[in-house]
Length: 305
Figure 1: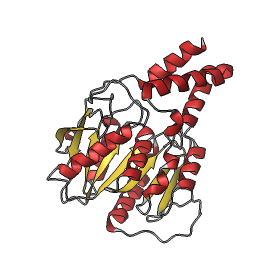
Figure 2: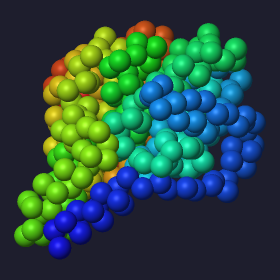
Figure 3: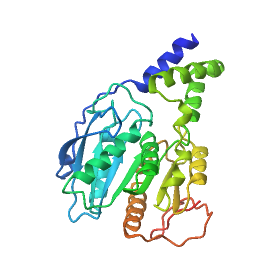
């Protein structure tokens, strides 16, 4: 039974999820272009996405969805960023949405998908002159942290609901599925996952990469009701990151739901962070201060931890 359950969990986590978005930026009054480009991974998977140009753009933001999602999960953030004159690239990771590929790799090769997006933007006449930032949630956040550690063309990172180590997330997931048999099932999952991905789960650990992003700024967003990537993961990521770093803890937000729970505050904080990141300025605030949002906010404080 342990082997069968491990096979099911591994299959579900890595299988292709083909989805087609029935909404496009045009539904929100925005022009866009269908684009395809290649992952920077050696397999050269073809990835599918949209470029949403902004008037008088201040920069370009790569938007990255989570595990099991697609670009449609980042569409409203593209609409929001367009109001602040940021061009966006929304794309489907490998084996997701309309992109090619047969196996999702839980953040491993998705890192190379992000690097492929950077190469694409650097090679396009409409975006080659713009600074690049990346915004991702869950697995997408892990992929952009790992990509930014390898690529200085990514000028700033915003990661929401992101795991510190994939192995820890999988242990929690297996415990929910297997109960008292979790230890044996996880060992089987770990072995099967390594065979499938070509790497051990322990190798996919953004907390070991995040320090290399400095001196470029990073904003971590922690959903306070997140049971998939709980506060402990955010603590580890924040502790491992070097300055300049910021963290915003969002009350009453489940996993990846900060924008749904607090859209106005999310918009203010993200736009302010990106404007400062692209201008090179940083807020002057006391270090190691934990300020959770309560009620209405003053002008634009940035939360540090």
